[in-house]
Length: 452
Image (tube, rainbow, N blue to C red; front, side, top):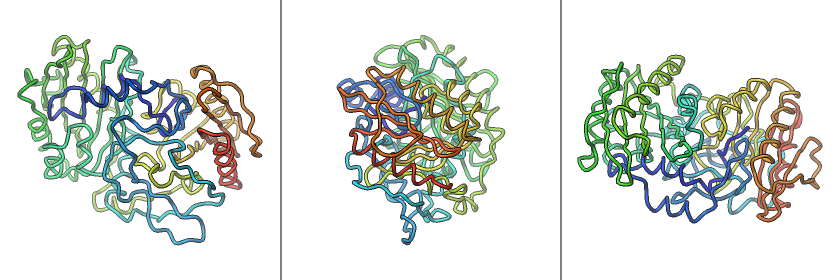
């Protein structure tokens, strides 16, 4: 696969620009200067396959800190104390691969999770991952938007997470009052740093979603930069604004109700020289997202707390992130949902289809459930080939741990290690910053999947 969900987060400047624009819509609608500066001082990475991209594992996205939304699980034989959500204060942190404090030992027997979430926030994240499976990846709306925008691609634990896209005020409070439950947003940029964000926010009732559109439009208004109302042909019930960016170009944002959902689209950059260009892309985005979201049946509000944490058992057999490395991104997600985190979603979608991948579990490792052992082998071979092709200096590397199926790469100059192994119908992917950690993690993950 060609994604960068849980490891490399030395995000390219273009990706930060997307998030920066979106995260300040309620204020200046301009890129976050601190984040851009931090990104410029780091090494922009070309993302590798899967969710453990090897180019700089363990680096956190600029200006963010890891969350603990996906609490470390308990090993078999202990009493589970939490599910997939705990006490994180932020929603927008970058996922990690090996993190700053990888454990000296990893679990080798299946883990235990609560059957359902013990917190509303955790349950909301489970529902958000369901939304991800129906939300269209921006690349599939416009193929020029190929670069991942990790800061603005994430599940939402509740209305407070709206600060990720809209700043600290007033949108989170408006979302709370309007009855928003959860959501998922996905961001991309093109090579010229033009950005596109799409999102879907879930409400308790269709009436609440409809009423939220004008409320959200009002909350996101900016007298300093807005130039007029966003009018999208074919979608008269949509509402939003377009305006100018200080660095040149424009932004265009709009909200649209569909059943219990509010669909949102935001675009910005120098290619938008007039409102008509933004309106045309917004119409294209609305057409794609509303068509796809028709297949999505939101969980009844009263039933969200009953959503299963690990219905297929795959998470219990996936090496978890622990401590500060645990994030809102950890957990099970459909293959379609996983594409939001992918650097080449079109290519990976084809691999998933051929291999029969339908489910992914993300943590310290990423585990992909294929239809057969042949499918798992295909995932492994494609991932490794892609990394070696796209990552400078990656050369074959032999594990000392006994993982017969593993294929590994090493970039010795930067101490970057990357492996994909298989166990039956499952492919698993891990990156690390040291040989010892890579060997330990790969060996443990191989054992976790034994007999599953």
